[in-house]
Image 1 (tube, each protein chain N blue to C red):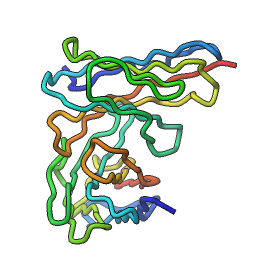
Image 2: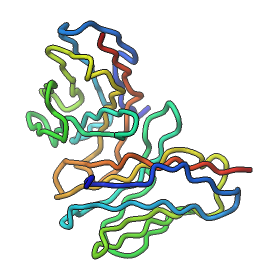
Image 3: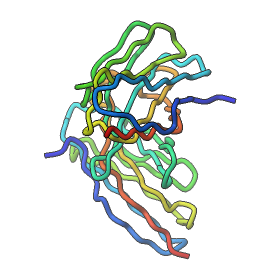
Length: 113
Length: 111
């Protein structure tokens, strides 16, 4: 089954404790992206990757890191999480860039206390 | 001014009516435009994308783009209660990988 898989689905952590949210797709898509969704603000793009070893900042990259060492995986790293990073996070992939259908993961609800 | 703006709603329409969802964007050079649907507690799913001025139809959905007015809309004909969801407009400003979303419009279709 074609899918984008995020883990974990739910995470509660403490301020400053490094964490990684994994994202994996099995569709051989070139493009992958991370978003956060907050009430009243909609979806905001954090980082995106057009292909392996190519990543770029979205609108809200501060406090986040990503890497794209292989096509299927695009982990989101929070080196020192803060409470303002409490949010619902989505990973998405599409065959090539944003001009084609995007598949979203199930979401990761992160709470930083 | 927000880069992509939508009325947050809720927009309420009776079953069988036409629902009209609107979106404006600020970057005149924007190239591609997308409509996503998001059910409560679920992930967004792509409904349609449009690049050229005019209308694009897919089943009960029609996307309309007017680049001169920086306006894109989504019409849902014969609205069904199952269409009740939040609809997200997204804009790709420059053919790269960046995607900017509006805050979404909540649609409620009453039986």
